[in-house]
Amino acid sequence: MAQSPKITYLSMQWKQWIQENLARGCTVDSMVDVMAAQNFERASANRFIRDIAAGGVSSLPVTVQAAPAPASRQGAAYQYEKPLFHQPGNVIKTPDRDVRVTFRMKQPVVAVFDNLLSPDECAELIRLSSIKLKRSTIVDPKTGREEVIDDRSSFGTFFTHDESDFVASLERRISVVMNQPIENGEGLQILNYKVGGEYKAHFDYFTPSDSGSAVHLANGGQRVSTLIMYLNDVEQAGETIFPEIGLTVTPKTGSAVYFEYCNSQNQLDPLTLHGGAPVQAGEKWIATKWMRQRRYGG
Ligand code: PD2
Ligand code: ZN
Image 1 (cartoon, rainbow, N blue to C red):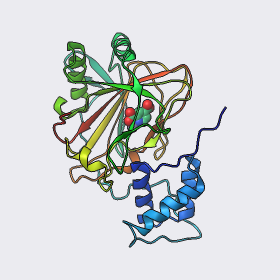
Image 2 (image 1 turned 120 degrees about the vertical axis):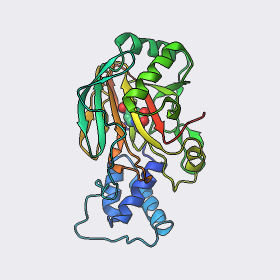
Image 3 (image 1 turned 120 degrees about the horizontal axis):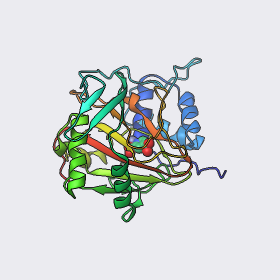
Image 4 (image 1 turned 180 degrees about the horizontal axis):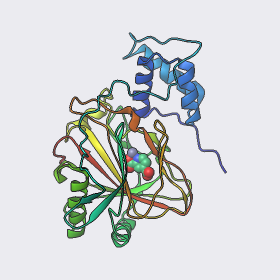
């Protein structure tokens, strides 16, 4: 298989990861190892880390120790409060469907749901999206602009809340499951990955120290939670992976994975690092809902 190109771009999530690990006293070498394993060119990774260490976090120790703490574990500072998703029991009753809870975890807050969407609803979302797919983007941490990058090799589109009665009914259901008002949600995003398509490990929240985040935080505040809904059974791979906690969620038509990462003090949970593994056979369709702290208007 052709090797994917080395990463030369520092996403906001990686910038935050570097800052957090510098703050924990991790060595540059241990961090370069982790970044190289995630397809960074070693020299670039080294330079990114040293630049960040010399800049915003210059007062923090950058030590070269014999036995560094593993750079992959962070999270000590995040305070777990009462989760946004705290509905008890095995079933969540929504206005039009009973959604089953098949997995729950407290730190980080993660849940997996079954029967969230019917097979017909999944097929309809795929049909409606197919005609308007565009190459997916990420938010450039410096400019705040949407940019196409290799880390996110999928195609996507959005639906507004009230685009149709069909979408509006899904919005009501999702709002009950996520326990947040519809108006706090960004438009439903549909993504399609072909063979080899992936979404490298990232955080869904905006890193406040990134200059490009301000424009996004001004509209609705921080993202607080994510619901990734699987619209098809992927033939091979394409799982959603949480590398910090060793969790792998396999796509299954109508099921979903939920996680939350922003508490009332605006702290952000780094254990929610997650990515979409490359699809090895078939294709993968998902719908993602991101909730904000307040009403989101655009
Ligand atoms: O496709 C996925 O599994 C995936 C992985 C990570 C989707 C997202 N993040 C996302 O939409 O934020
Ligand atoms: Zn994500």
